[in-house]
Image (cartoon, rainbow, N blue to C red; front, side):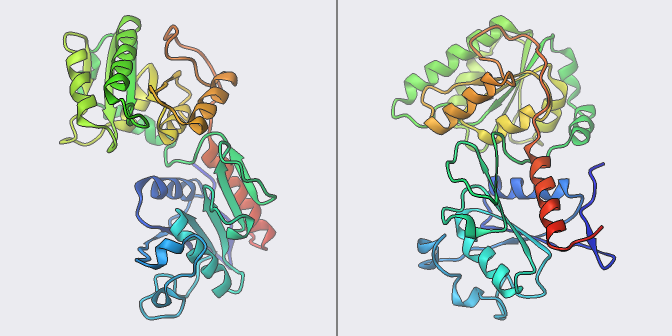
Length: 330
């Protein structure tokens, strides 16, 4: 069980999560809170136009200022506020000011306004801004734990047992993004699938909200006659079960979050480089391979060993140190 955050005056610390509702931002914030051994109040905020045009630099809308009847950031203020997404930067700063500096503020990813955005800023290494209050890691935060993955794997679909080993878990984002030639990108992805078919006994597939149906249709055709299982969005997504059950994991390299989550399992991870990959993600994947944490997908798909990568706990530990520096005691 993860250690709980420090308490103040015998009470569990109060935490807010501030996002505009984007799932990627919410998931990262919730992951950090879970590692703190706490619960948080989620505040999904839509600044509206024209205010969001100026963010992260502009102020919060007048109706959202602390103390206004309809403000989502009215007192009593939390002990910790964790935010993600450029629209939340002014809100986080407003909470800090209105609380008299008592709220410890945390921002996940580059706030685009510098170190003044929060007491603690986490960002992935491929973003270049650095400051004394910035924590940098290659992988990102997520809500997965070993216990949660093991529990999900125990409830896996029974049909998976019939698939021959080694079983490759394939996590798909959007392997045809970032290029105008989607046909060439799809051909590139299918060639990678052909390689996997020659290397493993079976393939278990789950996709994200960003995965085009053209990709899934081509994949279903390509895997026809080969031992496989593909998740249907009509059913509950067995994503966590896949992470815990499969012998090895393959992740399309367009998804920083999914690569991070795969590496938290300690399972062999083989990123599939898309036909077009932006330089930041290319550098991210290159560093992981150089560190021995991943192996190239176009090589042999064989087991290997590395230390689990857990940026979420690093961020939680940095928050604990920040709270201690602000006088919080267990």
